[in-house]
Amino acid sequence: MITPQITLKVGKEIPEDQLLSLYESCQWYAYTQGRRRSELQQAVRDSTYVVTAWAGSKLIGLARGLSDNSAIFYLQDILVRPEFQRKSIGRQLLENCLERFKHVRSRVLLTDDEEKQIQFYESLGFKNTKDFEETTNTFVL
Image (cartoon, rainbow, N blue to C red; front, side, top):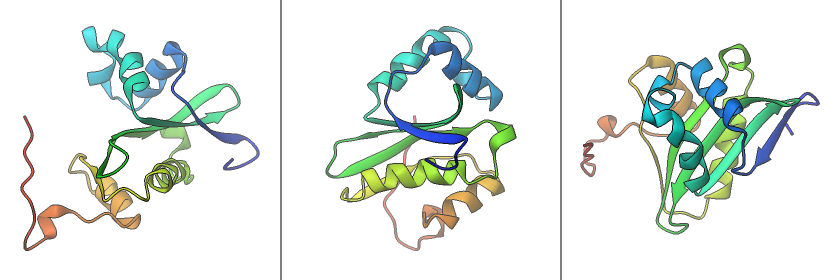
């Protein structure tokens, strides 16, 4: 629990209307338009780990990831409704995921090149690979 009003829950069964509303509030339309709209709930169910933040019965945040539970944890999504941002909810969601997968060798995420996102992840100890002198290559298709 974050505060008396906001609760964290682990689990994949989230009402579709709540999921769509959360993703749309963050303007993540790639998940909510066209055929992707009907795939979002299945994508969440197929995730290895899902943690959500709730204000009463309203879904206000979500983090989800994929993992083999040994070598890699990949953080797929982390989002918080705009009106609840900057209240440490995103940090709590991410820390919950990192704690769950602390035994995993590599923890990875891809994100946009927005300064506030870069600062958020760096504040939690993530390193940007473009700052490494030597690193593995990253490819995206």
